Amino acid sequence: MGRFYITTPIYYANDAPHVGSAYTTVNADAMARWHRLVGDETKFLTGTDEHGQKVADAAAKNHMTPQDWTALKSEQFKEAWETLNISFDDFIRTSEPRHYLTVQKFLTAIYENGYIFKDVYKGLYCVSCEDYYAIETSVEGKCPIHARDLIEMEEENWFFRLSAFEERLEQHYAKHPGFVTPETKRNEALSFIKGGLRDISITRTSISWGVPVPWDEAHVFYVWYDALINYLTAIGYGSDHDEVAKWWPSSHHLIGKEISRFHCVWWPAMCMAAGIEPVSHVQVHGWLLLGGQKLGKTMVADGAVKLTDIAPVELTNEFGVDPLRYYLLRETSLGNDGEFSHEGITQRYNTDLANNLGNLVARVATVVASKCGGDGPRPKVDSTLRPHAEVAVSETAAAWNDFSPQRALEATWGLIGATNAYLEERAPWKMESGDLLDAVMGDALEAIRLVAILATPAMPRTCEEIWLRIGLAGTPSDEVFGASTTWGQYAATSPIVKGDPLFPRMKSDA
Ligand code: ME8
Image: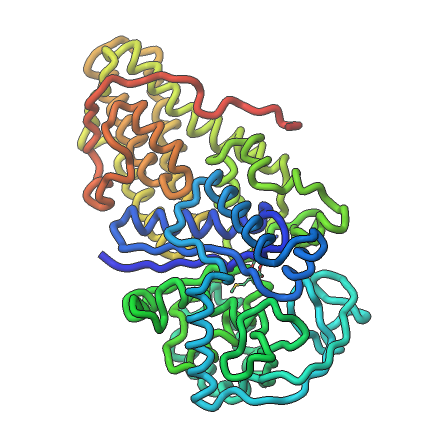
């Protein structure tokens, strides 16, 4: 049994959640569920990033205090995640006292180690990114990500001596080849480091909504500097229930590619400066796009899309929770960008879920209920389906372990396809009741049992439903993976239930 600590970025509490934030959260959830399924001690953290100019502006615009505003917004995130059946173990809000304590302890350690100094900062700032841009990286004076005007800022700030960590970061990357995946993102981060690092301003006096700097109360920490530390707050860094030694060596940050510089360059350097090891792994993913652009709240604000078209709760009303989860995990390989569309979800739904999985469960249940006396027969030890099942189990497991939900689901759906083909060839619906028919149906039921275990991280409720329908007790998550996934264990404890279609077909113009 291993350990697995997975985190999502903490989402800005300036607006409502959307399908882009759901993308990361569903992926992290599926990975957490996979690790729980294989028996790993697992901790899954998500939360909201509540400080900074952007959140303070949103609160002011809505005539609320930042405290009341962020309380409201963090509830909206929690509600969305509950709707999507997200199994987080902890939800952190950066305005919580436990986070203030950790931030102040962690940054005081860096200060005392001599890596923080005072200087004047002048530069162009994007409030949407909460980040400075050099003139060269701006696009005609606008932010390259949000295409918004950059604001000129000049402040006396405390700085972090990032430049002192170039060599140590390079050494860390060399020593830990899997530190950042996929490799393209690792190479990008590494070449950024090799290009030379500039010291960074880490405090602000222009706003008061932030964590106060303990050695200079006129300043608050810059939002990114407090935000990154959330990953340590949740495991009790510096508190009397400190579990850093327990979780940090098995820690994984799942993040979108636009925040990789913060996580793959600044964050490991901050950890080194504070005297702790960096996080063990950063998994970078690509973007959901709409019309080729990064889908997000800025698009809603600019009127390019309605929030209801990209709000997770609206989408689950339209497609169902598990179909949306499936689509987000299956459609694009983690690391690449992918175009998001209602047509795309409908197509996946009709093909993979209604035609392949739903149809398999329905046809097996119908034949067993009408021709096998209702109870599912046992599988054959030497079934021709067995090698397909063995490949599916090992490839699905390898892919989940490798942070590749798309490949995992492809492998699981390979077994669904093989089982449908097996049934087509034998046409049990035309066979007479008897041993021959029982043998075919036992094999198909065993394949369905295995699919229900393998697809659990992606579609937990559907898999529980399938489990019940094929007459098994408990849930697929009660099983001990490995022991439960060897061929031949299907043994019903109750009669097969036909039930309504799991995925009624949708009109393709839905
Ligand atoms: O950046 N496609 O918060 P944020 C895929 N608070 N993922 C997307 C996406 C899209 N179109 N849009 C958003 C912040 N995401 C900081 C993080 S962490 C210490 C601080 C996901 O609300 C993706 O994971 O802007 C991205 O990195 C994150 O939401 C950004 O969320």
